[in-house]
Amino acid sequence: MNNYKIETSYGWVDFKGIVKHPQKKLIKLTLESGKHISCTPDHKIFTSPFDDKIADKFNVGDYVYTKNGIEKIIKIENIEKDYVYDVIDTPNHRFFANDILVHNCEFIGKTNSLINSQVLRQKMNEINEKRITYKFVVDNDVRFYQDINPWKKYLVAIDTAMGVSGDFAAIQIFGFPGFIQVAEWKSDKLNQNEQIEKIKYIIDWLYAQIKIKGNNHPEIYWSLENNGSAEGFICSLRLLDGETPKGYIKNAKLITERGNKRIGFTTTSKTKSMACSQLKILFENNKFNIYSKEYLLELSNFSAKNATTYSATGENHDDLITSSLIIIMMYIQCKNSLDLDKEIINFNTETNDVLNYYDVPFILDCY
Image (tube, rainbow, N blue to C red):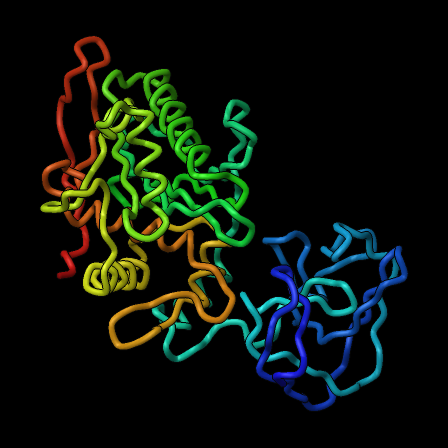
């Protein structure tokens, strides 16, 4: 199929082929614009860039996602059996059919994927992405999934980028104990100076929220991947910080890889393999609490590149995963020194003293 491309939400891309399936009963959805699609009752159709449901769950008056945005369904018909076709291997397994965004039927299951396909499929079916809206978050482009708990400890990590179209930077925020995904951000619209301001604003806002909610000693830690495009980010941070890039982001402590002269963590085949192994163990043992559908979409295409490392397949992206791997590296290095597996269950707000801790059983280190 090298002479042909298919249109997806990521643009025109290559695909491996088309599979013809036996005749099946179909459902035909017609939109107010005249667009229509015929598919099997269990085929998934998008209602937004991140949400979908199967065809036979739609009703007249519901909306689907198209190339031109959201459109209303005005007619639903059951039609006679006919052959159906499916596209093989598109980015994030989604493509436009008659301008309507749909999944291919074979969504998850590559044998070289980092995460067991059955575990990932179950998580995709179970997840109910609910976002929390905070009025004061800049541009409302940070997706929050959990409310701020003042007694949690927070790790924040950024995977930097050049800030040009298609080159995404990403930020993850996790609460501890429990490896709880609290929020994420991803964009290809900000240059590296603006990325610095973005993570600084998020951390300053998080710090203020924790204090408002009664903890006068917020524990927030941050880091970054320091190789690749991060050089510009680090240089800009150093200029902003007067040659010592550890204090410009004042309301969080910078965590640097032990023994590394550069700030942040250097991703090598060894360190990435270790972090990926830990991610696999945590996720498959239900210890890595993810609430983002886009993260799971990236994870479904996060596969073995060679014997020692994983990355996104084809033209897919893995920026949300890469930023979470920095969180894992921070955790592995600092879990004991920062008591990341111990939860504060009682706090004296008058004296700011911790009254006691609760030890939370957690997964063994992966070295």
